[in-house]
Image (tube, rainbow, N blue to C red; front, top):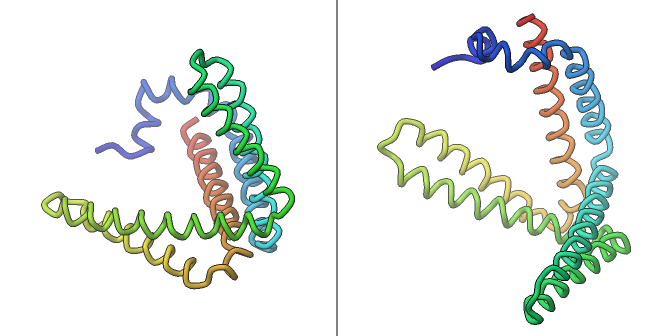
Length: 191
């Protein structure tokens, strides 16, 4: 098994990462921007929740418009109508998100909690079905943590809707920033 530093030192990896190594400073700067955004989001998780709900609304509108345009590519009337209806529903849902972001946050948090709960249960079942294989305990641990997160979100729902999405966004931004900074400095050392 090779480590990341070994793969960066290999001739093939060196040619693959050469353009990145030249821009290591920009990668570190990107990581710093992610970190700053994550800490700002962590400082105001309610505002980060609001912003993430608005982003979801924009994505729903874009997806709905694309769905309606895609409907016009369908030749049969029944499928056209179904695709167009789905697109219109996405567009309406996107605009409802803008009109009532708190309701959207409540619904998205409920879906997130339920998805984490189901995902955790499925990972635990998967882990015990592969018990003879070496990494099954890590899959089980991952499932237990995911299950507990889902339960915690659902137990505090709808109050958790005010902060959960923003908290998850902040954590994701901080982890991504740390990852980019680590990659940038790793590429710098490889130069």
